[in-house]
Amino acid sequence: MPLNSQPITFEEIYEKALQLGWDDAGITQAVIPLEDAQAYSLWLDEGLHGDLEYMTNRIRTDPKQLLPNARFALIFISNYKQPHAPFKEDTGVVASYARGRDYHNVHFRRSKRMIRYLEERSGQKNIARSFSDSKPIMEKALAVQAGLGWFGKNSLLIHRRFGTFVLISGILTTLDITHTPLRIYRDARCGVCTRCLDACPTGALISPYKIDAAKCLSYHLIEKKGPVQKNIQEKNPGYAFGCDICQDVCPHNQRSPCATSSDFQPSSGVGAYLTLEEIDTIKLEGTPLKRRGIEGLRHNLDSSSPHRG
Ligand code: B12
Ligand code: SF4
Ligand code: SF4
Image 1: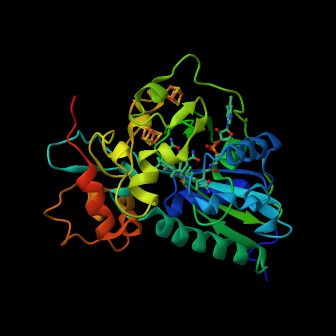
Image 2: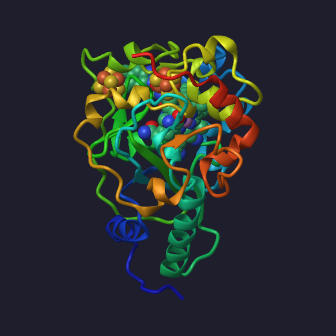
C-alpha cells in the first residue's frame, strides 16, 4: 500500500534530497536532447575519447535502455568545493573531488535511500534506477535540462549557485511526478571569457565546449594504466591525482561556498597532498584514488614536477 495516495510531487523529493545530504535537485524528462546526442556522436567520430572504451557505448543517449518506460530523470547535485591547495615542492596535489570519500559510494548510498522512499511512497517496486558516473548516461546534459545550470567552455556543468565544483548523480524513474518545470539555461553563457582554455596546461580544451580526453591530465592521472607519458609528465604542474586548473580559474567558482558535507572533507579521505614517502601507508579504500592504486599513484608522483611559477 502506498504511504499516501496523493500524487508524488517534486517538492517532496527535493526536501528528501536535502535531508539525504545532496545540495540541490532538479527534474527533467528521461530524454537526452538531440543537440547533446549529436555533439557526443561528433566527439566520438573525432576520436576525442582516447582509450576510454566505455564512452563508445551509444546507449548513453537513450536513458530508456537503462530503465524501460523511464519517464523522468531526477538529478542531484553535491557541492564538493575545497579551499585552494597551492603546489608544493616534492608533493603532489590531489584534485578537490578526490580528497574525501568516493562520491560513487556516497551517491549510491543516498540513492538507495531515495529509491526506498519512492517505493514506499508509491507502493510500487522496480520503479527506479540510480546512476553517478556508474552507468552509460549523459549526466551533464540531463543536469542542464533539469535547470540546474549550464555548460561552461571547460565542458563542465556550471551550477547556478555552486559553480563547477559539483558532482552529479541521478535516478531514472517510471513514476509520474508532479512538478513545475524550471527555467533551462541552454545557451552559451561564458561570454568572451576563455580563462579555462588559456590555463589548461596540456591544451586538452581544444575549442570551447570540446575536450580531447586523451590530452587531459585527469585522463592520464586517473584513468590510464601504467606510467605517465613523457610529454604529459612535462606538462603536469604538480598533481598527484586528477586536475582542477580549468575550474580554479573559472570566475563562477570565485564566490561559491565550500562543501559542507562531511563526506567530501579532506579529513574523511586522503586529503589535499600526497608524497612518495607516505604512499605505502596511505589508506585508499573508499576513496577515488583506489581506482589508480598504489603503483599508479607512484607513477603519478614520479611525474608531478613542482610548480614552476
Ligand atoms: C568521460 C568523462 C571524463 C573524461 C572526458 C571529459 C569530458 N568532458 O567528456 C576525462 C577523463 C578527461 C574526465 C575528466 C574530468 N571529469 Co569526468 N566524466 C566523464 C563522464 C564519464 C562522461 C562525460 C561525457 O559524456 N563526455 C562526452 C562529451 C561529448 O560530452 P561533453 O564534453 O560534456 O560535451 C558536451 C558539451 O560540450 C555540450 N556542447 C557541445 N558544444 C557546445 C556548444 C555550446 C554553445 C554549448 C552551450 C554546449 C556545447 O554538448 C556536449 C554533449 O552534452 C562523466 C560522467 C557521465 N556519465 O556523464 C564524468 C564527469 C563529466 N566528470 C566529472 C569530473 C568531476 C571530472 C574532473 C573535474 C575530475 C578531475 N578533477 O580531475 C575532470 C574535468 C575535465 C573537464 N574539463 O571535463 C563530473 C563533472 C561534474 C560537472 N561539474 O560537470 C562528471 C559529470 C561525473 C559526475 N558524476 O559528477 N571526465
Ligand atoms: S582538468 Fe586540467 S588538463 Fe584536463 S582540461 Fe581541465 S585544465 Fe586541462
Ligand atoms: S573559465 Fe570562463 S570560459 Fe571557462 S567555463 Fe568558466 S566562465 Fe566559461
